[in-house]
Length: 257
Image (cartoon, one colour):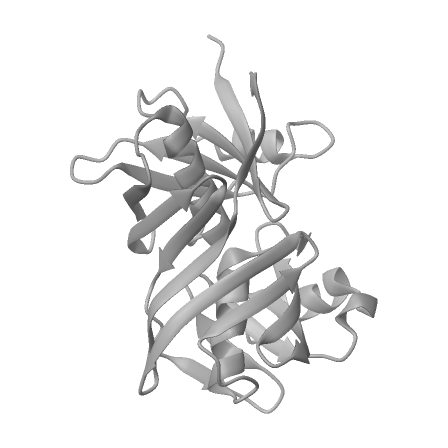
């Protein structure tokens, strides 16, 4: 049986998306997921997403990292699946869906998707980095001249360090450009390499930069190698609520397996 797939990207963070409402894809076949995400022998992607039926909301999102393992929340993937749901005619301009970290709301206008992220009530500041969870765990560190960094090497050193290697962590290198504008490069666990953009990563960066006083603004502009994203939030004490990740999400192509 032929299996139809779609390729989407959100600021260069790319995903294979499959309409699995009829349970046509074997979710236990992690080897196949990894093979499909392989950039030389497969379709090539940072992750694979299944859109599935849900009895109470528009759909459910099941996300796998490129290594084939089901993973924590993916922000750009969440924006892409909203665009896919609109393409399928499941939604018009608004969506509610279930992901691994709970319910999400979103809106879409053209290719621009706004995704409501989880509240963040715990931000831990250390001498040279900030640690927080925005649906996925993140390490955020300021750096001068992020363009010159070997992100894969430096990121893997943190990700596999004694303190983080058990669960793994995503590593974000941040350069403060001006006021509420930051440049970000991210090493993603599960991909085990730099990606062109990371949605939960830029969300973590925006919150971390506000928390440590690098910006007082609650609308933060993030420049990634794959494009620009915007994060908005409301701060109530030490809790960040009403967090939104905003940016473009586009279909690249579709094909059959």
